[in-house]
Length: 77
Image (tube, rainbow, N blue to C red):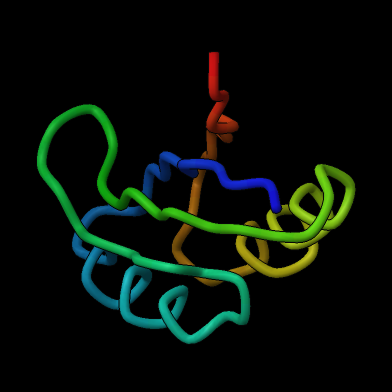
């Protein structure tokens, strides 16, 4: 199982709606709207890194109101 944090910037006033919608996507563990340089932080998981990438590109990035994402895979050192 691969997990990652996805840091999301949204259009002004869209953070709450984006977080709520992303929370319904299969593989998303948690989606929170936050303050700071990013508007939403998502924790997601998938069986492989490829599946995680496909989820972010095909599902998360397609949500209306998102302007930019940064995916940070979790590593266990």
